[in-house]
Length: 127
Image (cartoon, rainbow, N blue to C red; front, side, top):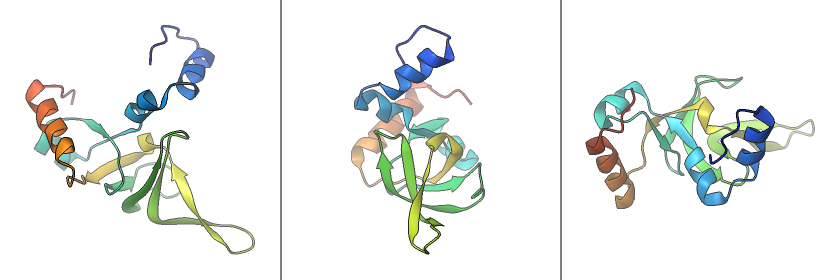
């Protein structure tokens, strides 16, 4: 974020009005302990196909693959975790990435592999 203020309202304003390419980087989730050891990095932006575990909330402990990432709303949808309306229809529950832990990475994209290698070799690790 580019704001220098410590005022919470200004922080929220900057977050909500950030451009999409900046918001994309904010959609990061921490890696599991095994992945942290393997890659030497603490967190990574989530993407469709990653397997995650819910760390907080009513669905804590449940795992599933990410089916959709909404950058504009800063939310992630996980397959198999659905809510139910009063009339019985089901809907996908949105999660904020900070409440998730990445347990398995989708490495089908070669650019993502390069990002992992670059960050691991640069010593960006903070944990």
